Length: 64
Image (cartoon, rainbow, N blue to C red):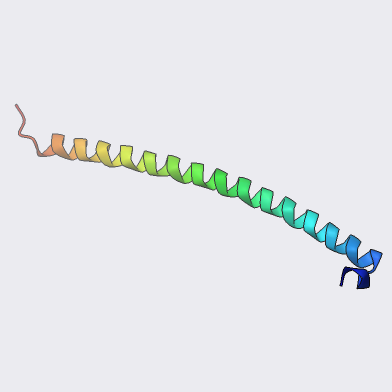
């Protein structure tokens, strides 16, 4: 079957393959970056939740 392919077809396939590999690398990098940002946002949210709980406890505690 490969013998039926023209040099132009093989070049196009090779170029497309290279482009797709680059796109996969970029998407992998983007995914890693977004995952790190999500982890940071979750950590920040947990901190904020604890802070709010502490403030609520202070408000609810009797003065004195």
